[in-house]
Amino acid sequence: MLRRKELKQLAREVGEKFGENITKLVDEGAEILKLESGREVVLAGDRAILFRTPEGLFPVLTAADLIPLRRVVVDMGAVPHVANGADIMGPGVVSAEQDIKTGETVIVTDERHGKPLAIGLALRPGSEMKARGKVVKNLHHVGDEVWRMLRKG
View: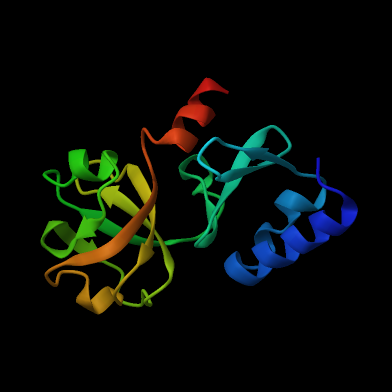
């Protein structure tokens, strides 16, 4: 469990990055789970909501509905690669919200069902997402260590 001072710092960080509307998730208490890879998962109540990497603090896929993220949609050919942890390449992007900024946290979904596949970091603005090369760095995806921990409960 986090101490009051640590909890206030976490709430401040969450508010600055994702907006004040979600700080209530950590206001009433949070716990940090440290994984073997060095990642940390933030639990609030009975639900995992965030994870921390050297790149920063991000929502877990199962809590992406709580935090408004801009969307990048990939074609079905890209799905197995993204689910294996590959970064998102421009040719696989079907659409992206135009107001995505470089460095912004985004959610990657498939084109057929709109299912969340990954949480990533935009390497290019939304208007350039269909360009060649890597456009989103994959930070957390279906089937990774965090996902498996969440599925086990």
